[in-house]
Length: 75
Image 1: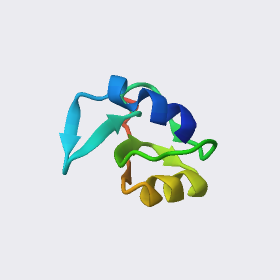
Image 2: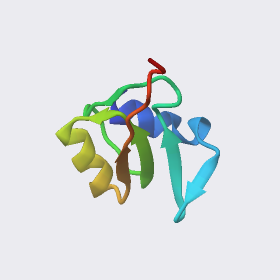
Image 3: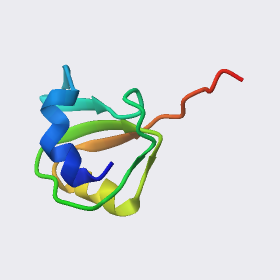
Image 4: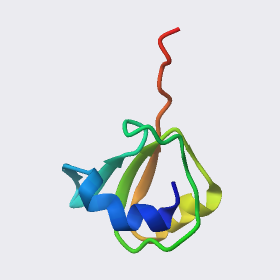
């Protein structure tokens, strides 16, 4: 998923708030990587397994943070 698409969908994808920021658990939604294409202006806390450097910078510049999560596959 790209940060630009995330900007438009963040409020629909999340039901959780933390520190007045919307929390979006992309990993739980089946996404594995956040990419930096697009613009992000909302301060979001994003849970994802992998994130590009440019996406991380855009999230931080918007006042948010990226939480890298490694999910167990059950094997």
